[in-house]
Image (cartoon, rainbow, N blue to C red; front, top):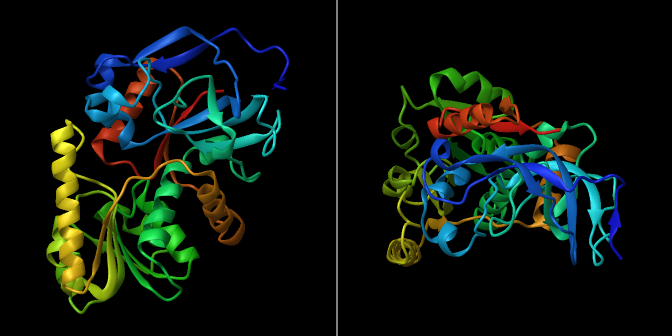
Length: 349
C-alpha cells in the first residue's frame, strides 16, 4: 500500500522542454505542472537541490536519445537530493517517508529540476548527514561514472599510478578524490588557476596543461590508468604506449560530439570503439574503454561509503543557482563554458 506525507500539492513548479535546441530557446518554467503519481516501486521525492551535467544540455541539442528514448515532456538534471514524501505500494523496503536521499535519475523518465520527482526506490541512497542537500545532489552521476571508470574498467589497485585529465572539473575532481581514497598515486591535469585546488583535493602531482604537455612529460609507461574526463582522448590514445603500462587502461567518458545525432552516427562511433579495443587487444595492451554510465543504486552506495565514511571527502561545488528561469539559464551557460570548478547546483527548496 502506498504511503504519503500529509498536505502534498496537486500542482508543482518544474523546468521542462519538449523541442530541441539551446536551453535559452527551449527550456520553460511550468508553474502548474501536475504532481507525479506514485506507482509500483517508485518513490516521490520533494527535491531540495539538483545538479547540472553536460549531458543535460547535450540532450537538448537533439539526437537518438531524446527522439526515441525520452518522454515527450522532459525535465532536465539527472542528479538530485531531497526528502521522500511518498512511497509506492511496492516500495518502502529501502527508504521511508521523511528520509533524506540522493540519486542519479533515469534519463528515460523524469529529471530533478522540479519541485517533486519520481524515482525508482532501488536507485536512491540515504544522504550523508554531514553533507548539505546541495553537496549531496552534486555527486550521484559523477560518482557512479568514476567508480565504473576506475574500478570496473580501470581495475584500480592500491599503489597504482593514475592520471586524471580535467582534474578540477565536476567529474575530474571526484576522480582525484576517489582514486586517492582507493590508495592510488594521482596526477591531476588542469589549468594554471586550478593547480592549488587540485592539490588540495589530494592529487600528489598537478600538471598545468597550459605550460606542460602530460603526454610529453610522462614517457616511461608511468601509469596504470589514464582517465580523461573532458576530451575524446585522442592525444592520450596516440601516446598510450609511452604513457601507460601494457597492463594499464585508457578510460574515456566523452565520445565524439556527433555520436548520438543519428542511428548512422551511433553505429559509426560504435565501430570506432570496437576497432580501438580490437587493436589494443592485438597489441597486448594497454586497454581502451569508452562508456556511458547508467543509474545504479548499489554502485552509488559503494562510492558514497568510500568517499564519505572512509575518506571523509566533500563534494566540490562551483556555484549554487536559484530556482528561477534567469538563474537556471545562467547555470546552463556556465556548464557549457567548460570552466566550472566542481559541480553546478540549483537550490530548489
